[in-house]
Length: 263
Length: 245
Image (cartoon, rainbow over all chains, first blue to last red):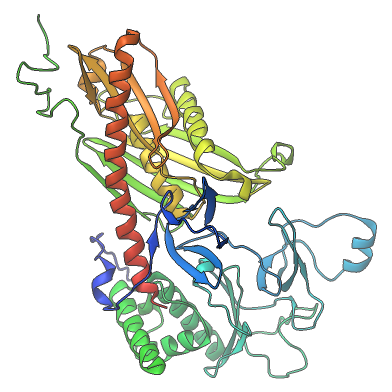
């Protein structure tokens, strides 16, 4: 069996590869953002003696009267209407819960759901009320930082390359083969356990490696970026996509295409 | 007087530094991809690594969960090869437990725990090479790691040690200076407000000198803050340039 080994190399500073002019206001904890008391404070800030002070390291974002600091990496903060993908670790054992959930969702199942409500302590309440959500069958899960998942109108995408993805707002991304029949969607309560064809599996593996490459180069994840990355990766072998230099090349190309598309 | 002269007549210390001079500090954030936050710091020859996990659900007994704030759990470990003589117990010994407790007190003061009730934030610090000022290096590394994880903090926590020799306060003691047996003070400061997170000394020092030593430690901690601030801004700038918009 052939093995490839590499020695560790010093990481290149990443800023030189992208020549973007950013006029962002970057702050670190303890920095005063503003002394104007007219603003409402959002995430990443706190009020201290008449001043608004940053509590995380990141860029300041202002939406009308709301100021918040977007940190580079954060724990997921649930908002109503978000789509999340996750695994059931524990179930509440109560009588009505047993009646409702018996046989449908077990502990250890991977599910997609929507956030229904957020409690004051940050806990979220999920629901799987439409057939769109529910148990997930065969596919690949990729865990990324929640800050890299772009907020869009829909998080369920059927990519033209032959697979579908669910971009959970909590950073869990689910890649699965596009079901042929539109009636039985990704969820429902019975997992589709039919064998997946090799072609589909290759597409899914390639998508997974593309997402991992995008994440290492800190590109926002949404359907267009994933698709462009997939197309840019086609000349390479799937397993080569995990090599740092190929990753850089593919993501550079993706970035270029995304920039062209914007401008 | 036989032995090592900690402060020469011209005002130079054993390693050639001046009384209030810090050792060379190099730091890097985001050294581990798997952890939520991580950082590495070198203060002279003292090397420390810090890793932060969280905030996440309380592991173990749910009863320990605090209803209005997060639990901060710190663990200190020093590698067996970190000191001159090979250490037999890297963690679990008295000094490690005490350091862990001190780190916890320090970070409970700085982290805004009310924002994450019923959660737990784990901070693990490992000393790879100990050449004096290990508490300070641990606090500085942990601050960077907590920032890297995106956990909200009131301010940076910058720490430095200080000593007192020949009526002069020395800042940032190395192992040689610590082993000499004089009084040593460890100070953890929140620079923007000047508030003290932790002040620790277990030696005998005349109260007349306390002011001077405290002042030297505070000044050194602010210098550390300048350096850490630069490191963090550089890191944020790089990462935000990549993210684009």
